[in-house]
Length: 322
Image 1 (cartoon, one colour):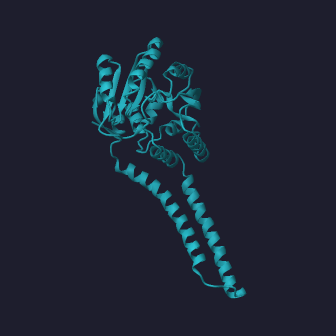
Image 2 (cartoon, rainbow, N blue to C red):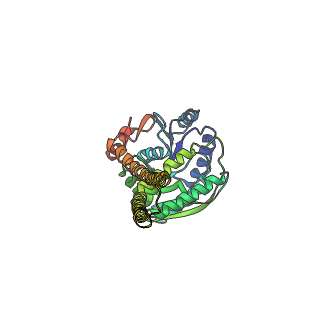
Image 3 (cartoon, rainbow, N blue to C red):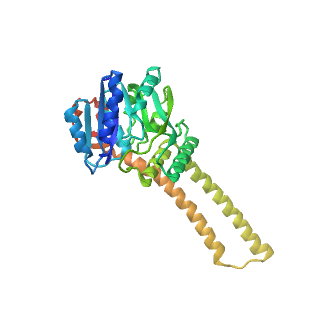
């Protein structure tokens, strides 16, 4: 198998047929042996039925049906676990990322690169708030991590089998795949493109899920929040010490001192707020440690037409349950 195309699916019935046709229109002329891997991540519409129909007509269509919704990054991980291709493309089903870019990505890979990611030159059909928050997040993440995570990129990319095998050795539960790929290293490059408007349906990436993904990215690849909590603790302690000196000076030297609750309440609220922020940051890291210590399967497969039993043992250890 020369190429695997991983497609996570969550309520994408409006786009599956068009995506399949466009992918075939792109890949058939390339003359490659390829497969499509659709991962149904707990869809509540007719997505799974449409995938079953495609699989019955085309033996190159493989599917994985989760027992429930495990999340986009976990769905991509499942596709990587079961992909057979020497090269793997990750693409969403909403048609915002153009399948027509795949030949150029593949050509770059053949030039000796191990990762070729698609970098967004523009983003159509998205609100100003989403564009702004995405821009700020990518730049914040790039500034606080000790690895080079490219800005303005999603998961749309092509990776070599060498990178896929490396990803299988990273068992953390809180996945941030684009960060993991950057951490792995090897020769990487990019192609720019203009991201289109969503073809149909509604996005499954709510602001809540985007915040969760952002937290996974930051806590998974940076300890800057912990350092910030430590520094803020020292700063607050310094300010509190200065306030204490001023209070003693006012009480014993100038005698210009009237007891009151205002300064006391301000000090308590200020110190308490900083402490709660620090505890919350530490809690985020501890929660992720706890999740990984439990060693639960990364996902549960309800049904698939891929023989899971034939998957190499290291892949099964990464989280397959069937």
